Length: 203
Image 1 (cartoon, one colour):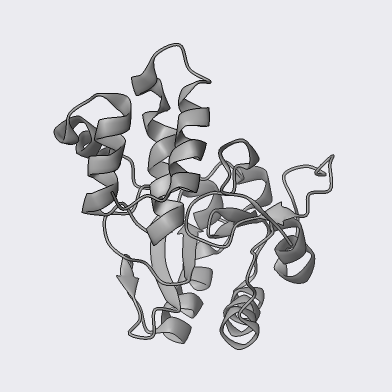
Image 2: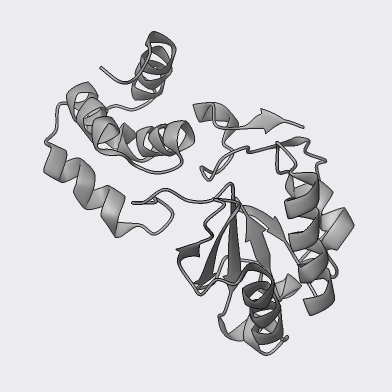
């Protein structure tokens, strides 16, 4: 068993939220990613046992959705939208600047394990294009200059918890709409920060 008793207990709490065990597969995969930074083989076995499904069924979901990572990532996953709204608002220059700063092409991780970079399709922030995510925390209205400032900040300051509100204030511009509720929770891993499944952390 590679999951400790605390993680098993959290998984069992999540499973109880669903009428069928197997419906908890998505959240349990995020628990696994929160633990290791990606979906490792041991977690596939644990999840399979917890849900009473085969390892192949677990892997089929984990490998289908791009937000579930199959390989170790850097501390900071930089995702830049390349869909039409972001592209017409200069995401190409944002992508180019991040690639130059990190020395990475899409889906690569640097040797120091600081950054993983990826070009992604729409992340649902078209009104605040171009949009960038750090560990799935969204920043809208990012200019090429601010993208470089963001990279420098992450590399030099090494923040433990990534919070969208903080990053938006420091590096963002025009937003899709005014965010109604101030949120000081975020994530310290490449698993999205969901409070209900225990992957969120307070800044």
